[in-house]
Amino acid sequence: MRFMMLMIPKGYDSAGPDIRPGAEAVAAMTKYNHSLTKAGVLLSADGLHPPIAGVRVAFGGGRPKITDGPFAEAKELLGGYWMIQVKSKAEAVEWASRCPAADGDLIEVRQVFEMADFPPDVQEAANGSSRS
Image (cartoon, rainbow, N blue to C red; front, side, top):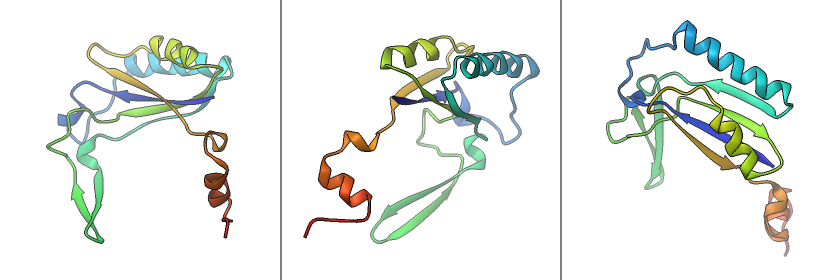
C-alpha cells in the first residue's frame, strides 16, 4: 500500500518568498528521512517552496483562471510530502508520528489509489480501451 504523508507547516500561508528551514530542522528531517530509507519504505520525498511563490490554475466556464500566490483564502498549505510504501494505514500513521515536526505542524496521511482499487470498466478506460 502506498501512502502520501503531506506536511502542512504552521504559518506557511503567510510565509515570505525567502523562507527556508534552518540547519537544525534540516538535520532532524534528514535523520528522519534516512530512517524511512533504511526501513525500505520511502519512495520519494520533497519540500515545497512557500505558497507566495506558487500559482493556482482553477477551471470553470471552459477557461482556466490563473492566480498567483499567496492564496488569501487558504488556511493550510503543503510544505512538502513523503511517498511511502507500507503494509497498512496503521504503519503509515506510525511513520508520520515519528516525524520531527515543529509545534503546530500537521501531517495528513492519505492512501494512494492503485489500479486494483477500481472496477474493471475503469481499469479498461485507464488502459486506453473501452467496452463498446
